[in-house]
Image (tube, one colour):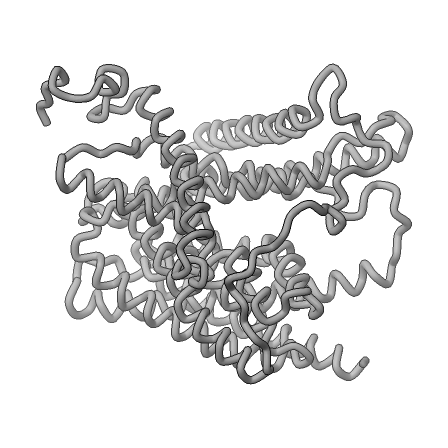
Amino acid sequence: MDTDVRHLPAIFNYVNFENENLSFGLFSILAICVFMLGANVMRRKVPVLRRALMPTAVIAGLSGLALREAILAFTGINILSTVALSGLIYHLLPIAFIALCLREKNGYTEEFNRVKVKQERVTAARSGAVIISTYLFQGLIGISVSLLIGLTILPQLNPGTGIMLALGFGQGPQQANAAGYIWDAAGYMDAWGAGSARNFGLTIAAMGFLWASIPGIILINRIAKKKGIKIQRDEFQKSGSLASYLVEEPGEVPLSESIDKFSLQICMVGGVYFATICVIIGIEMLFRMSGSVFLIDLVPTIWGFAFMIAALIALLTKMILRHLVKSGVMHRKYPNSYMMNRISGAAFDMAIVAALCSISIGMLGSLWIPVIIMTTAGGLGCMLYLRFLCNRVYKDYQDEAFLAMYGMLVGTIVNGMILLREVDSEFKTPAGDDLVLGSSAAIALGIPVLLLIAQAPRAGNLWWVMLVIALYFIALVTFALKSSKKKADAG
Protein backbone atom coordinates (compact mmCIF):
# COMPACT_ATOMS: atom_id res chain seq x y z
CA MET A 1 0.00 0.00 0.00
CA ASP A 2 1.39 3.41 -0.99
CA THR A 3 0.87 6.01 1.72
CA ASP A 4 1.86 9.66 1.63
CA VAL A 5 3.04 10.28 5.21
CA ARG A 6 2.82 14.07 4.74
CA HIS A 7 -0.96 13.81 5.10
CA LEU A 8 -0.94 11.43 8.09
CA PRO A 9 -0.28 11.93 11.83
CA ALA A 10 3.35 12.39 12.89
CA ILE A 11 3.46 8.89 14.41
CA PHE A 12 3.73 7.51 10.87
CA ASN A 13 7.18 9.11 10.66
CA TYR A 14 8.35 6.96 13.57
CA VAL A 15 6.22 3.82 13.43
CA ASN A 16 6.14 2.06 10.09
CA PHE A 17 2.77 0.29 9.97
CA GLU A 18 3.63 -1.42 6.70
CA ASN A 19 6.89 -3.14 7.67
CA GLU A 20 7.99 -4.89 10.85
CA ASN A 21 10.45 -2.82 12.88
CA LEU A 22 11.34 -2.21 16.52
CA SER A 23 9.13 0.87 16.90
CA PHE A 24 6.13 -0.94 15.41
CA GLY A 25 6.67 -3.87 17.77
CA LEU A 26 6.95 -1.59 20.80
CA PHE A 27 3.82 0.29 19.73
CA SER A 28 1.92 -3.03 19.56
CA ILE A 29 3.06 -4.11 23.03
CA LEU A 30 2.05 -0.75 24.52
CA ALA A 31 -1.31 -0.99 22.74
CA ILE A 32 -1.95 -4.31 24.51
CA CYS A 33 -1.36 -2.57 27.84
CA VAL A 34 -3.92 0.08 26.89
CA PHE A 35 -6.42 -2.62 25.84
CA MET A 36 -6.01 -4.25 29.28
CA LEU A 37 -6.64 -0.95 31.09
CA GLY A 38 -9.65 -0.19 28.92
CA ALA A 39 -11.08 -3.68 29.42
CA ASN A 40 -10.72 -3.37 33.18
CA VAL A 41 -12.76 -0.14 33.13
CA MET A 42 -15.33 -1.70 30.78
CA ARG A 43 -15.77 -4.77 32.97
CA ARG A 44 -16.39 -2.62 36.04
CA LYS A 45 -18.65 -0.02 34.42
CA VAL A 46 -20.63 -2.04 31.82
CA PRO A 47 -23.16 -4.33 33.56
CA VAL A 48 -23.45 -6.73 30.61
CA LEU A 49 -19.71 -7.37 30.56
CA ARG A 50 -19.55 -7.66 34.34
CA ARG A 51 -22.27 -10.28 34.37
CA ALA A 52 -20.80 -12.17 31.42
CA LEU A 53 -18.20 -13.77 33.74
CA MET A 54 -15.52 -13.15 31.14
CA PRO A 55 -11.93 -12.50 32.32
CA THR A 56 -10.59 -8.99 31.74
CA ALA A 57 -7.81 -10.35 29.50
CA VAL A 58 -10.39 -11.93 27.18
CA ILE A 59 -12.40 -8.71 26.97
CA ALA A 60 -9.17 -6.83 26.21
CA GLY A 61 -8.17 -9.29 23.51
CA LEU A 62 -11.56 -9.32 21.78
CA SER A 63 -11.75 -5.50 21.98
CA GLY A 64 -8.28 -5.18 20.47
CA LEU A 65 -9.18 -7.67 17.74
CA ALA A 66 -12.36 -5.75 16.87
CA LEU A 67 -10.49 -2.42 16.77
CA ARG A 68 -7.65 -3.81 14.65
CA GLU A 69 -10.03 -5.47 12.17
CA ALA A 70 -12.17 -2.31 11.90
CA ILE A 71 -9.17 -0.07 11.18
CA LEU A 72 -7.81 -2.64 8.72
CA ALA A 73 -11.14 -2.79 6.89
CA PHE A 74 -11.51 1.00 6.56
CA THR A 75 -7.90 2.09 6.02
CA GLY A 76 -6.02 -1.04 4.95
CA ILE A 77 -3.53 -0.43 7.81
CA ASN A 78 -2.74 -3.13 10.34
CA ILE A 79 -2.06 -1.26 13.59
CA LEU A 80 -0.58 -4.27 15.42
CA SER A 81 2.65 -6.05 14.59
CA THR A 82 2.12 -9.73 13.80
CA VAL A 83 5.75 -10.46 14.64
CA ALA A 84 5.54 -8.71 18.03
CA LEU A 85 2.27 -10.43 18.96
CA SER A 86 3.61 -13.85 17.94
CA GLY A 87 6.77 -13.22 19.94
CA LEU A 88 4.78 -12.24 23.03
CA ILE A 89 2.61 -15.35 22.87
CA TYR A 90 5.58 -17.64 22.31
CA HIS A 91 7.90 -16.24 24.99
CA LEU A 92 5.37 -15.38 27.71
CA LEU A 93 4.16 -18.99 27.98
CA PRO A 94 7.54 -20.43 29.12
CA ILE A 95 8.02 -17.40 31.39
CA ALA A 96 4.65 -18.05 33.07
CA PHE A 97 5.44 -21.74 33.58
CA ILE A 98 8.90 -20.97 34.97
CA ALA A 99 7.44 -18.55 37.52
CA LEU A 100 4.82 -21.13 38.54
CA CYS A 101 7.41 -23.88 38.95
CA LEU A 102 9.84 -21.74 40.96
CA ARG A 103 7.24 -21.10 43.66
CA GLU A 104 7.58 -22.83 47.01
CA LYS A 105 4.04 -23.55 48.13
CA ASN A 106 4.95 -24.61 51.68
CA GLY A 107 8.36 -22.97 52.04
CA TYR A 108 11.68 -24.73 52.62
CA THR A 109 11.32 -25.24 56.33
CA GLU A 110 7.77 -26.55 56.81
CA GLU A 111 7.71 -29.93 58.53
CA PHE A 112 7.17 -32.79 56.12
CA ASN A 113 3.71 -34.31 56.48
CA ARG A 114 3.70 -37.70 54.77
CA VAL A 115 -0.07 -38.23 55.04
CA LYS A 116 -0.88 -34.77 53.65
CA VAL A 117 1.56 -35.17 50.77
CA LYS A 118 0.09 -38.58 49.90
CA GLN A 119 -3.45 -37.17 49.92
CA GLU A 120 -2.41 -34.29 47.66
CA ARG A 121 -0.74 -36.70 45.23
CA VAL A 122 -3.87 -38.85 45.01
CA THR A 123 -6.06 -35.76 44.48
CA ALA A 124 -3.67 -34.42 41.85
CA ALA A 125 -3.54 -37.73 39.99
CA ARG A 126 -7.33 -38.14 40.00
CA SER A 127 -8.04 -34.58 38.85
CA GLY A 128 -5.15 -34.74 36.36
CA ALA A 129 -6.76 -37.85 34.86
CA VAL A 130 -10.08 -35.99 34.53
CA ILE A 131 -8.35 -33.04 32.82
CA ILE A 132 -6.29 -35.08 30.35
CA SER A 133 -9.18 -37.43 29.57
CA THR A 134 -11.18 -34.34 28.60
CA TYR A 135 -8.36 -33.22 26.29
CA LEU A 136 -8.47 -36.65 24.65
CA PHE A 137 -12.27 -36.52 24.39
CA GLN A 138 -12.00 -33.12 22.71
CA GLY A 139 -9.36 -34.52 20.34
CA LEU A 140 -11.63 -37.39 19.32
CA ILE A 141 -14.53 -34.98 18.70
CA GLY A 142 -12.32 -32.63 16.68
CA ILE A 143 -10.83 -35.38 14.53
CA SER A 144 -14.28 -36.85 13.87
CA VAL A 145 -15.52 -33.44 12.69
CA SER A 146 -12.47 -32.75 10.52
CA LEU A 147 -12.71 -36.22 8.98
CA LEU A 148 -16.39 -35.67 8.15
CA ILE A 149 -15.80 -32.20 6.70
CA GLY A 150 -12.75 -33.39 4.76
CA LEU A 151 -14.77 -36.18 3.18
CA THR A 152 -17.64 -33.85 2.21
CA ILE A 153 -17.43 -30.08 1.76
CA LEU A 154 -13.70 -29.27 2.27
CA PRO A 155 -11.56 -32.03 0.74
CA GLN A 156 -8.41 -29.87 1.13
CA LEU A 157 -8.77 -29.92 4.93
CA ASN A 158 -6.20 -32.13 6.62
CA PRO A 159 -8.29 -34.64 8.64
CA GLY A 160 -5.82 -34.58 11.53
CA THR A 161 -6.26 -30.87 12.21
CA GLY A 162 -9.33 -31.53 14.34
CA ILE A 163 -7.05 -32.49 17.21
CA MET A 164 -6.39 -28.75 17.61
CA LEU A 165 -9.69 -28.62 19.52
CA ALA A 166 -7.90 -30.30 22.44
CA LEU A 167 -5.42 -27.42 22.59
CA GLY A 168 -7.63 -24.45 21.74
CA PHE A 169 -10.33 -25.52 24.22
CA GLY A 170 -8.35 -27.63 26.67
CA GLN A 171 -5.19 -25.59 27.16
CA GLY A 172 -5.88 -22.14 25.76
CA PRO A 173 -4.48 -19.80 23.11
CA GLN A 174 -0.81 -20.03 24.12
CA GLN A 175 -0.53 -23.77 23.54
CA ALA A 176 -2.72 -23.55 20.43
CA ASN A 177 -0.28 -20.98 19.11
CA ALA A 178 2.67 -23.31 19.88
CA ALA A 179 1.07 -26.25 18.05
CA GLY A 180 0.11 -23.96 15.17
CA TYR A 181 3.75 -22.90 14.88
CA ILE A 182 4.74 -26.56 14.45
CA TRP A 183 1.99 -27.22 11.91
CA ASP A 184 2.86 -24.11 9.89
CA ALA A 185 6.52 -25.18 9.79
CA ALA A 186 5.41 -28.58 8.44
CA GLY A 187 2.95 -27.06 5.93
CA TYR A 188 -0.11 -28.99 7.14
CA MET A 189 -2.51 -26.13 6.31
CA ASP A 190 -0.76 -24.42 3.42
CA ALA A 191 -4.03 -24.31 1.48
CA TRP A 192 -5.04 -21.28 3.58
CA GLY A 193 -1.71 -19.42 3.45
CA ALA A 194 1.21 -18.79 5.78
CA GLY A 195 0.35 -18.77 9.48
CA SER A 196 -3.06 -20.37 8.90
CA ALA A 197 -2.52 -23.17 11.44
CA ARG A 198 -1.76 -20.67 14.21
CA ASN A 199 -4.76 -18.61 13.21
CA PHE A 200 -6.95 -21.73 13.19
CA GLY A 201 -5.85 -22.72 16.71
CA LEU A 202 -6.18 -19.21 18.14
CA THR A 203 -9.70 -18.85 16.73
CA ILE A 204 -10.75 -22.14 18.33
CA ALA A 205 -9.34 -20.86 21.64
CA ALA A 206 -11.31 -17.61 21.28
CA MET A 207 -14.50 -19.58 20.67
CA GLY A 208 -13.68 -21.60 23.78
CA PHE A 209 -13.73 -18.42 25.87
CA LEU A 210 -17.22 -17.68 24.55
CA TRP A 211 -18.35 -21.22 25.42
CA ALA A 212 -16.95 -20.78 28.94
CA SER A 213 -18.76 -17.48 29.44
CA ILE A 214 -22.18 -17.62 27.74
CA PRO A 215 -23.27 -21.22 28.49
CA GLY A 216 -21.41 -20.81 31.79
CA ILE A 217 -23.92 -18.16 32.89
CA ILE A 218 -26.81 -20.48 32.05
CA LEU A 219 -25.23 -23.36 33.98
CA ILE A 220 -24.55 -21.12 37.00
CA ASN A 221 -28.13 -19.86 37.13
CA ARG A 222 -29.50 -23.41 36.96
CA ILE A 223 -27.19 -24.73 39.66
CA ALA A 224 -27.68 -21.66 41.87
CA LYS A 225 -31.46 -22.06 41.61
CA LYS A 226 -31.19 -25.73 42.53
CA LYS A 227 -29.02 -24.91 45.56
CA GLY A 228 -31.02 -21.84 46.58
CA ILE A 229 -28.05 -19.49 46.07
CA LYS A 230 -28.70 -15.83 45.25
CA ILE A 231 -26.28 -14.58 42.61
CA GLN A 232 -25.03 -11.00 43.21
CA ARG A 233 -22.72 -10.06 40.37
CA ASP A 234 -22.92 -6.32 40.92
CA GLU A 235 -20.81 -6.52 44.04
CA PHE A 236 -17.04 -6.02 43.87
CA GLN A 237 -14.40 -7.59 45.99
CA LYS A 238 -12.88 -5.14 48.44
CA SER A 239 -9.15 -4.58 48.69
CA GLY A 240 -7.01 -3.56 51.63
CA SER A 241 -6.22 -6.94 53.12
CA LEU A 242 -3.64 -9.52 52.17
CA ALA A 243 -4.55 -11.88 54.97
CA SER A 244 -5.18 -14.74 52.54
CA TYR A 245 -1.71 -14.38 51.00
CA LEU A 246 1.70 -15.14 52.45
CA VAL A 247 3.60 -12.19 51.02
CA GLU A 248 6.97 -13.00 52.55
CA GLU A 249 8.46 -15.97 54.40
CA PRO A 250 11.17 -15.94 57.09
CA GLY A 251 14.71 -16.12 55.77
CA GLU A 252 13.99 -14.50 52.41
CA VAL A 253 15.97 -11.71 50.76
CA PRO A 254 14.87 -8.25 52.08
CA LEU A 255 12.48 -6.25 49.91
CA SER A 256 15.11 -3.69 49.00
CA GLU A 257 18.83 -4.25 49.34
CA SER A 258 21.55 -3.55 46.76
CA ILE A 259 19.03 -5.00 44.29
CA ASP A 260 15.26 -4.82 44.51
CA LYS A 261 13.62 -8.09 45.50
CA PHE A 262 11.25 -8.04 42.53
CA SER A 263 14.21 -7.50 40.20
CA LEU A 264 15.71 -10.69 41.63
CA GLN A 265 12.54 -12.62 40.83
CA ILE A 266 12.54 -11.37 37.24
CA CYS A 267 16.24 -12.19 36.86
CA MET A 268 15.71 -15.72 38.19
CA VAL A 269 12.91 -16.31 35.70
CA GLY A 270 15.04 -14.81 32.93
CA GLY A 271 18.03 -16.93 33.94
CA VAL A 272 16.01 -20.15 33.78
CA TYR A 273 14.57 -19.15 30.40
CA PHE A 274 18.09 -18.38 29.13
CA ALA A 275 19.15 -21.88 30.21
CA THR A 276 16.07 -23.30 28.47
CA ILE A 277 16.95 -21.66 25.15
CA CYS A 278 20.56 -22.87 25.45
CA VAL A 279 19.36 -26.44 26.08
CA ILE A 280 17.01 -26.35 23.08
CA ILE A 281 19.76 -24.96 20.83
CA GLY A 282 22.03 -27.77 22.04
CA ILE A 283 19.37 -30.41 21.33
CA GLU A 284 18.78 -28.98 17.86
CA MET A 285 22.51 -29.06 17.07
CA LEU A 286 22.76 -32.71 18.19
CA PHE A 287 19.69 -33.70 16.15
CA ARG A 288 20.98 -32.01 13.01
CA MET A 289 24.46 -33.49 13.46
CA SER A 290 22.93 -36.98 13.73
CA GLY A 291 21.62 -36.77 10.15
CA SER A 292 18.45 -38.64 11.18
CA VAL A 293 15.42 -37.37 9.26
CA PHE A 294 13.13 -38.37 12.14
CA LEU A 295 15.15 -36.37 14.70
CA ILE A 296 15.50 -33.36 12.40
CA ASP A 297 11.73 -33.37 11.89
CA LEU A 298 11.31 -33.15 15.68
CA VAL A 299 13.18 -29.81 15.88
CA PRO A 300 10.07 -27.60 15.32
CA THR A 301 8.20 -29.69 17.93
CA ILE A 302 10.93 -29.04 20.51
CA TRP A 303 10.89 -25.29 19.83
CA GLY A 304 7.08 -25.26 19.77
CA PHE A 305 6.79 -26.86 23.20
CA ALA A 306 9.67 -24.96 24.81
CA PHE A 307 7.45 -24.30 27.83
CA MET A 308 7.66 -27.98 28.81
CA ILE A 309 11.47 -27.89 28.86
CA ALA A 310 11.32 -24.56 30.70
CA ALA A 311 9.07 -26.08 33.39
CA LEU A 312 11.44 -29.04 33.87
CA ILE A 313 14.50 -26.78 34.18
CA ALA A 314 12.62 -24.56 36.64
CA LEU A 315 11.72 -27.57 38.79
CA LEU A 316 15.36 -28.71 38.69
CA THR A 317 16.47 -25.20 39.69
CA LYS A 318 14.05 -25.22 42.62
CA MET A 319 15.39 -28.58 43.81
CA ILE A 320 18.98 -27.25 43.68
CA LEU A 321 18.07 -24.06 45.57
CA ARG A 322 16.19 -26.06 48.18
CA HIS A 323 19.18 -28.38 48.68
CA LEU A 324 21.58 -25.43 48.99
CA VAL A 325 19.45 -23.83 51.71
CA LYS A 326 19.00 -27.03 53.70
CA SER A 327 22.71 -27.88 53.48
CA GLY A 328 23.68 -24.41 54.75
CA VAL A 329 25.59 -23.41 51.60
CA MET A 330 22.99 -20.72 50.84
CA HIS A 331 21.59 -18.78 53.80
CA ARG A 332 18.71 -16.96 52.10
CA LYS A 333 15.71 -18.09 50.10
CA TYR A 334 15.56 -16.20 46.84
CA PRO A 335 12.28 -17.19 45.11
CA ASN A 336 9.23 -15.42 46.55
CA SER A 337 5.99 -17.28 45.85
CA TYR A 338 3.78 -14.20 46.03
CA MET A 339 5.88 -12.31 43.46
CA MET A 340 6.24 -15.39 41.26
CA ASN A 341 2.45 -15.67 41.19
CA ARG A 342 2.24 -12.06 40.06
CA ILE A 343 4.80 -12.67 37.28
CA SER A 344 2.99 -15.76 36.01
CA GLY A 345 -0.41 -14.03 36.21
CA ALA A 346 0.81 -11.02 34.23
CA ALA A 347 2.48 -13.27 31.65
CA PHE A 348 -0.68 -15.34 31.13
CA ASP A 349 -2.90 -12.22 30.90
CA MET A 350 -0.64 -10.49 28.37
CA ALA A 351 -0.31 -13.69 26.32
CA ILE A 352 -4.09 -14.13 26.15
CA VAL A 353 -4.59 -10.54 24.96
CA ALA A 354 -1.82 -10.89 22.36
CA ALA A 355 -3.21 -14.24 21.16
CA LEU A 356 -6.73 -12.91 20.63
CA CYS A 357 -5.47 -9.71 18.97
CA SER A 358 -3.36 -11.73 16.52
CA ILE A 359 -6.33 -13.60 15.03
CA SER A 360 -6.89 -12.74 11.37
CA ILE A 361 -10.59 -13.01 10.55
CA GLY A 362 -10.01 -12.54 6.83
CA MET A 363 -7.36 -15.25 6.63
CA LEU A 364 -9.71 -17.92 7.96
CA GLY A 365 -11.85 -17.90 4.84
CA SER A 366 -13.54 -21.28 4.45
CA LEU A 367 -11.91 -22.45 7.69
CA TRP A 368 -14.81 -20.78 9.48
CA ILE A 369 -16.92 -23.83 8.58
CA PRO A 370 -14.82 -26.38 10.53
CA VAL A 371 -14.24 -23.84 13.32
CA ILE A 372 -17.99 -23.29 13.92
CA ILE A 373 -18.94 -26.97 13.64
CA MET A 374 -15.95 -28.18 15.67
CA THR A 375 -16.37 -25.71 18.54
CA THR A 376 -20.13 -26.29 18.74
CA ALA A 377 -19.67 -30.06 18.93
CA GLY A 378 -16.78 -29.60 21.35
CA GLY A 379 -18.67 -27.25 23.66
CA LEU A 380 -21.78 -29.43 23.90
CA GLY A 381 -19.72 -32.62 24.12
CA CYS A 382 -17.53 -31.28 26.95
CA MET A 383 -20.58 -30.13 28.87
CA LEU A 384 -22.21 -33.56 28.75
CA TYR A 385 -19.00 -35.50 29.32
CA LEU A 386 -17.87 -33.46 32.33
CA ARG A 387 -21.36 -33.58 33.87
CA PHE A 388 -21.25 -37.38 33.62
CA LEU A 389 -17.69 -37.73 34.96
CA CYS A 390 -17.87 -35.14 37.75
CA ASN A 391 -21.06 -36.73 39.11
CA ARG A 392 -19.08 -39.93 39.65
CA VAL A 393 -15.61 -38.67 40.55
CA TYR A 394 -16.54 -35.74 42.86
CA LYS A 395 -19.61 -37.14 44.60
CA ASP A 396 -19.57 -34.72 47.55
CA TYR A 397 -19.41 -31.56 45.44
CA GLN A 398 -20.58 -32.53 41.96
CA ASP A 399 -21.92 -29.14 40.87
CA GLU A 400 -18.92 -27.12 42.06
CA ALA A 401 -16.46 -29.52 40.46
CA PHE A 402 -18.43 -29.54 37.21
CA LEU A 403 -18.52 -25.74 36.89
CA ALA A 404 -14.82 -25.40 37.72
CA MET A 405 -13.72 -28.14 35.32
CA TYR A 406 -16.05 -27.00 32.54
CA GLY A 407 -14.84 -23.39 32.74
CA MET A 408 -11.19 -24.44 32.70
CA LEU A 409 -11.48 -27.09 29.99
CA VAL A 410 -13.20 -24.89 27.42
CA GLY A 411 -11.43 -21.69 28.52
CA THR A 412 -8.60 -21.36 31.03
CA ILE A 413 -8.19 -21.95 34.76
CA VAL A 414 -9.27 -18.32 35.29
CA ASN A 415 -12.66 -19.10 33.69
CA GLY A 416 -12.98 -22.15 35.92
CA MET A 417 -12.30 -20.17 39.10
CA ILE A 418 -14.74 -17.43 38.04
CA LEU A 419 -17.57 -19.93 37.50
CA LEU A 420 -16.75 -21.74 40.76
CA ARG A 421 -16.77 -18.51 42.77
CA GLU A 422 -20.39 -17.84 41.77
CA VAL A 423 -21.67 -20.94 43.62
CA ASP A 424 -18.85 -21.36 46.15
CA SER A 425 -17.76 -17.82 46.95
CA GLU A 426 -15.65 -18.82 49.98
CA PHE A 427 -14.18 -21.91 48.28
CA LYS A 428 -15.50 -24.23 50.99
CA THR A 429 -15.39 -27.23 48.65
CA PRO A 430 -12.11 -28.73 47.35
CA ALA A 431 -13.06 -27.87 43.74
CA GLY A 432 -10.55 -25.00 43.54
CA ASP A 433 -7.74 -27.19 44.89
CA ASP A 434 -8.68 -29.85 42.35
CA LEU A 435 -8.04 -27.38 39.54
CA VAL A 436 -4.63 -26.32 40.86
CA LEU A 437 -3.36 -29.76 41.88
CA GLY A 438 -4.88 -31.42 38.82
CA SER A 439 -3.28 -28.91 36.48
CA SER A 440 0.14 -29.70 37.96
CA ALA A 441 -0.34 -33.44 37.47
CA ALA A 442 -1.71 -32.82 33.99
CA ILE A 443 1.67 -31.45 32.86
CA ALA A 444 3.19 -34.93 33.21
CA LEU A 445 0.10 -36.85 32.09
CA GLY A 446 -0.33 -34.54 29.09
CA ILE A 447 3.11 -35.00 27.51
CA PRO A 448 1.92 -37.93 25.31
CA VAL A 449 -1.05 -35.80 24.19
CA LEU A 450 1.21 -32.93 23.09
CA LEU A 451 3.39 -35.31 21.08
CA LEU A 452 0.29 -36.78 19.41
CA ILE A 453 -0.99 -33.30 18.56
CA ALA A 454 2.29 -32.53 16.83
CA GLN A 455 2.14 -35.74 14.78
CA ALA A 456 -1.59 -36.17 14.00
CA PRO A 457 -1.75 -34.13 10.74
CA ARG A 458 1.25 -35.94 9.21
CA ALA A 459 0.19 -38.21 6.32
CA GLY A 460 -0.44 -41.79 7.44
CA ASN A 461 -0.37 -41.04 11.17
CA LEU A 462 -4.02 -40.31 11.88
CA TRP A 463 -5.30 -43.85 12.41
CA TRP A 464 -2.67 -44.97 14.91
CA VAL A 465 -2.91 -41.59 16.64
CA MET A 466 -6.68 -42.08 17.07
CA LEU A 467 -6.09 -45.59 18.41
CA VAL A 468 -3.57 -44.35 21.00
CA ILE A 469 -5.89 -41.49 22.00
CA ALA A 470 -8.82 -43.89 22.47
CA LEU A 471 -6.78 -46.36 24.57
CA TYR A 472 -5.26 -43.60 26.71
CA PHE A 473 -8.71 -42.06 27.17
CA ILE A 474 -10.18 -45.35 28.43
CA ALA A 475 -7.23 -45.87 30.79
CA LEU A 476 -7.53 -42.39 32.34
CA VAL A 477 -11.31 -42.54 32.77
CA THR A 478 -11.00 -45.97 34.39
CA PHE A 479 -8.33 -44.68 36.76
CA ALA A 480 -10.38 -41.59 37.72
CA LEU A 481 -13.49 -43.68 38.45
CA LYS A 482 -11.60 -46.34 40.41
CA SER A 483 -9.64 -43.84 42.50
CA SER A 484 -12.88 -42.07 43.36
CA LYS A 485 -14.47 -45.38 44.40
CA LYS A 486 -11.47 -46.20 46.65
CA LYS A 487 -11.78 -42.81 48.31
CA ALA A 488 -15.51 -43.38 48.92
CA ASP A 489 -14.87 -46.85 50.36
CA ALA A 490 -12.11 -45.48 52.62
CA GLY A 491 -14.41 -42.72 53.83
